Length: 89
Image (cartoon, rainbow, N blue to C red; front, top):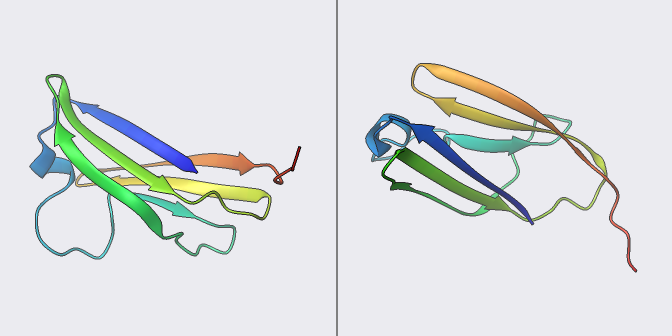
């Protein structure tokens, strides 16, 4: 499982995850081909410090470089994740 929890200090939930249909989630995980992995859970909540987003994806089986994209109104940020091959012990 890949689990990401992000806190946006000072933001309101509607600022980063507006209600209604939209083409993209505010946090996406892309494989090396640029294909979005399907999340198995996600949502947002309002915390004392700001808005919090919580997303999960099934851990990809192939080793590789994945891009974790944060896309909210007025800002974008990408984090590169190097996922090692799975080992059975």
